[in-house]
Image (cartoon, rainbow over all chains, first blue to last red):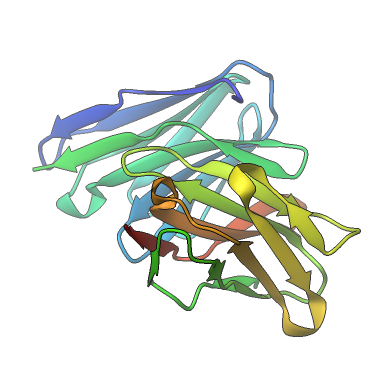
Amino acid sequence: DAGITQSPRHKVTETGTPVTLRCHQTENHRYMYWYRQDPGHGLRLIHYSYGVKDTDKGEVSDGYSVSRSKTEDFLLTLESATSSQTSVYFCAIREYETQYFGPGTRLLVL
Amino acid sequence: AQSVTQPDIHITVSEGASLELRCNYSYGATPYLFWYVQSPGQGLQLLLKYFSGDTLVQGIKGFEAEFKRSQSSFNLRKPSVHWSDAAEYFCAVGTTSGGSYIPTFGRGTSLIVHP
């Protein structure tokens, strides 16, 4: 158990509203990642962070922003949610060269 | 850029039969290699990993994987499948790009186990 929690675990929202997902870790890992998982696509990287205030884009970053103001928290914001952002979102940390994942957030955008 | 291919979207086996899930990667050097398992509604759990050394690695739940450099493959095996092994399996490759560590995942193989 890498001490990763995600909140909320489930969320239903409406198109056009902003949504923020939180990833929290307890073990001071430098790298944190946000992925989305969709059927047939596996896991696709949205954004990642390599330290406080240090973030970069992944392959599917359009429509998403992130912030990391302290080591333990990595926030993912959907600036104006769309139905195409309905997905399961996973946070991960890197410990040495291995990733460990949180339990996921299931997001439905109506 | 690196890529990971899991050629089988679904695999069906009978309980007690042997299992092999295929994974091929594209990368210039030997990357870090991983297999994860995801049960329905759950997060991803690490099964095993290969960094260097012995090319046959043992993991949890009775799984093993073999790294074959000449084939750029890292196939997952289990000699006797249990019904509880029904899940989604992901192969992943860890590489460094521009100074950042960015793992890449295959699209997954769904394992169905018949009684």
